[in-house]
Image (cartoon, rainbow, N blue to C red; front, side, top):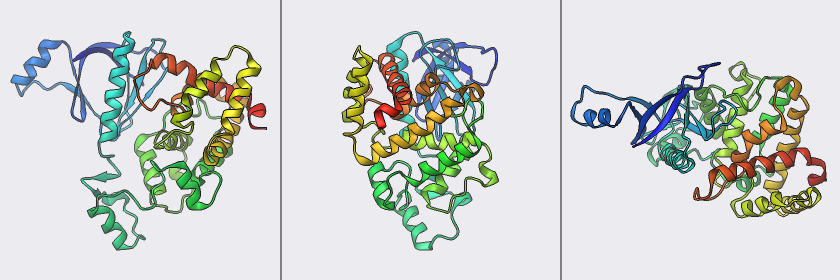
Length: 338
């Protein structure tokens, strides 16, 4: 049990932070006023702590929603957002890793439950034997897109950039360039998960459909696509090399070093990277309207596109370099990808 501060992310403009003792208990986070409350709850069934269900939730670091340091956000399946904070760097890093590992190990509510396809989103036009295979073999869809290797996805469709990525980018550039906080603001999680399910079932996807009117659902799904890659867009084996490149003191040197690294990446990664950053650069051009500067996008995409294979490093230091690399890719796009 450790003490952390928590608040509802939606309590704007004034966030009411509350210190509580937090326990990660199976698929739930439980909150107690003090250690005595937690002990009492073990003996008295009538004492029930406040809790958050982690099934179907997502977790990410966030700096833009609070002036405090070491803040991360949990978004529940129902769309509620909670911020957590601790001044102790190691403590908050341990909590983030433990909660993320728990979320990753849980079934995704709205997708699969006990190995069965939930009836609400079951695609009726699919052959029955396909549905039976998925249900009884406890498998994900044979058409899976999310959580699949980027190279595999591109080879499957014989394309340089995965189709879903291109569809999302086209939708954002069509109707989301002026949206306040584009890519920073969270869309409704249950709607995002519905979109993910459709994509994984390889149903015909039309992002102009009214059910995807909220452009933040589209951007949320695109971010989740990159977060769920088994290996990040910047592959694990390149992480330290990119960090060393960004550390170089002279601007020309680290631009040159990063350019060389980018062009040694697997083709699927390099092509996707070029497409994504070309798109994000257009977002920055409209920063006076959408309020998404290079720095803002660095914060949003730093840990989504680059991460260590293990969480043993200094998280705060890593965040700085992750953000800086994304910022450089945007500001020096022409030099890097020419």
